[in-house]
Image (cartoon, rainbow, N blue to C red):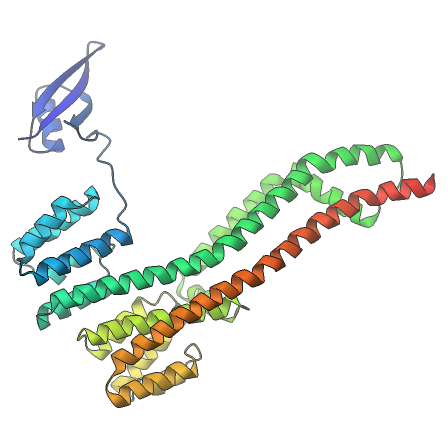
Length: 399
């Protein structure tokens, strides 16, 4: 039985001791039954029980490593329970290790693997669980797990590409704001004192800069409140069905960025559907999973319309061709894949092609944004500098 050390205060003095119990809660209950109120309690070599165990975030990398190792063990012929027991105990992430052991416990009481994984949807989503279920039914769990690991890695790589495209513009805009704020709060007021002593009317650009400086110094809370209010309202609107649809529709129509979002959506849809079909998941069910995991409401609506059309006897290509989010080339390749009976392979080729297109779009966006942001920052700082020197020139002409 584990041993827990504790500290308690008795008549104003701190006392320490040890108690044996099955777990932390049992240790606390045992001490309370002895009229001991612990201030802290922890397992020997563990975290404080009163403050709870340290929770480690479960990352995509954890899931990929688990999936690859699980595939290798299943391929070697080890029973599922033994595989999960080994993976749970050797996991570098304690929180993930505990979760894997809970999955093992669910299997031991009679549940199958996919049902056990579905109890932890934040770690294993519907795509993962449905593929595992297809692998269990088809007796190809090791192959499915390998495909899953490859799919997750490629999906994560795609997500990182998009994030990297947003980092540079965000960093430049942040630096621009900090520079302007510094000038407005600390530099411009010193000029204002000089100009006030001149007794002359300030030029228009100079007056604008002075007013902005006063706003930064005196109304900063309005600016911060406005930003917070905008973020709050945006989240509230995006949380509604209609707001979500409209924002996603607008994002697809944005210049430069909209094209990137479309290519990412097509790549994700193609890879997800291709992986599901090649793993033996029925087409309607596969499309339903694609819709729910698309991450874009416009794509989701388009795929649900396609499902309804297929149920009425149409092919996949026909209803997709009526949706503007899918380019004609994608529709043609899907049509060829359906006709040749190699839809999964064609979808994989589409995904690979659009992965490369996303790479090119990210590079193009970065190369386009860099000079634009530099010019933007230069214009702002240049305007401020010129505005500050105009009164000086005016005073020189008067002299």
